[in-house]
Amino acid sequence: MDAATAGTEKETVTAQPAVDFGVLAAAVADAVTGPRAGRPQEAAVAVALRRRAEGATFTAIAEAIGVSEKRVRLWCRVAEQRDSRFDARGAKPRRVRAAAATRPQLGKMIGFRPRQELREQLEQRAAEEGTTLTNIVEAAVSSYLSRKTPNVGLLVKRQLRKNLAAELAVVGTAVAEQRLELTAQGRNLNQLVRLCNEGRVPVGVRAEIEATQAALGRNTEVLAALHAAVRTLVGLDEGDAS
Image (cartoon, rainbow, N blue to C red; front, side):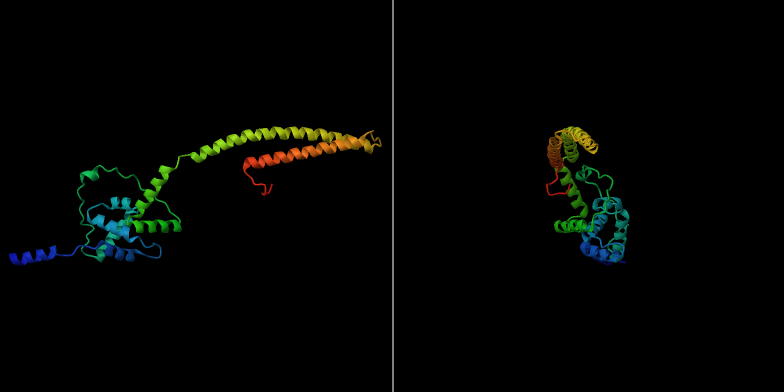
């Protein structure tokens, strides 16, 4: 082979068009979609393929986009089959720039299974912002943690329980007093009934019965007030069932 021919072949290789990762990602997504595995996001596949072509490791790519390393390897293998210009195995680790070296290292991957509706919302937001699902979830978690006071719900419940215990102690004392009063009225009624059964109707029995009836009426009013107070403490509406 002469120098002119070698130069021509070199120019031909150099002029080879670059890989379109968007088109390749769509082809990979179509190929890996099956009855058990849903269709992956083309944006995530494109990011994985581009980072692999730049030299990133499978582990780093998996942690960056929030999928398993096995999934990334599958995407790259299918991409290599679809486009011979993509060489996943031949990718060499890229040099770490000074700015990248100072970035905080990522921790272990956290996985969860969201509801289908929530996943669709996350995927839609990721598509609208042109980013990965991992970035959307991370931004949402960071925003939630920055605005919510830790354990505030537990502290409020403890304080409410403490206040409620004090209020119920007062109600309990009042109920105990009414119980003693009802016990005394019950003894009076038993004595009156026993005397009537023995034929010894005491003088003024009518007044005794009326007084006992009035006392029972007062007890009923007090118990109703206590019932309403307890309902107010626990936050029940007047229309709710007792």
